[in-house]
Image 1 (spheres, rainbow, N blue to C red):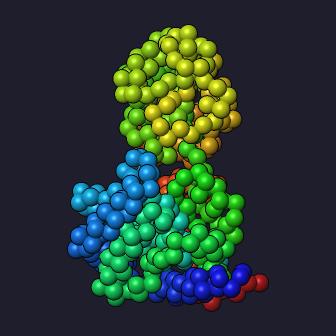
Image 2 (cartoon, rainbow, N blue to C red; image 1 turned 90 degrees about the horizontal axis):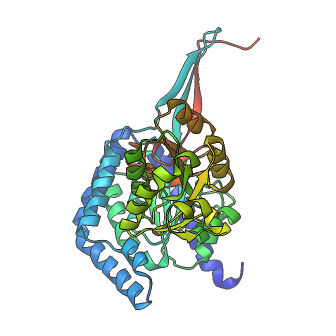
Length: 423
């Protein structure tokens, strides 16, 4: 560390120490007090509406001056309706059951010891995200619901918006009698601050959650010295089985691809059984093209419906755009093999009326979320009833799939005895 980075290093270490202290206080608070804080967060987001929207307008103006893409500016933009949706989302989190102290399992041993596995907060969450300023409120609400403190580092392009949202959240914590250090905003836009968070701020951070593009997530996964909840890509497949209902296939595929093309749950690849390719592909392709989707396919798909030839790179690409790659497969075993080879273990779906085929797919596809007769766009914590999500995790340890409040807890064992000693 050179002398020029020492002030930032000291600032970040102090921030981490405050978060650790606040985490202990939030964990020991009652569920009712955390609920009151969440309701106050929603109130203050609305009360500070003018300040937040003014800050966001400055961020948006700066982004336009830099010539950033319209899709980026749309993600950055807050308006009255979007801010109200953020506040309503926090209220939804306030309404879900407080997970802290909930018993996951309980049993009694032959010697009379009563053992319970109960949920406890993780501690301090480090959240690194990019353009969407609403993530600050969403993540803070879920962290608090689970009894954690959180350190939020947004992208430089949303810095003013995130600071304004953070001020509202800290007002709420004070109203509820909780430490405002339970939600802290990294004020510096220096990229070195991210590196310091990835190192754990001297043991202060217990887990890192990245939310953003592939380059950000890749950096976090490569450099983090603390556990990470993340997914790198959403290379998601929808498989139309030979026993699929034709109308369901059209409706599900179009929604899975085109409802929102830029979300991580969007379908990027379509697999169709050869036995029904000529029957199923044309109506699906026409419906997609009517919505402005570009199709790319192998020779069999091209023979059935005109489209661009898919390249080798297409089978593993995450487009996040109105582009879909289409491939014919022999049967469910080949479909599962293709998903295993090219997928990212995020979200994959089968469309079929054959229950045995559906169960085989659900059992053998090793993804965080596997669906039968439903759109991959349901890969969302809110749709799972979690009240929201801090992100999607595709790892195998601790959290997998949408990371909501419950997934932001760990557990401990509580053992109650009546004087038992071990022989």
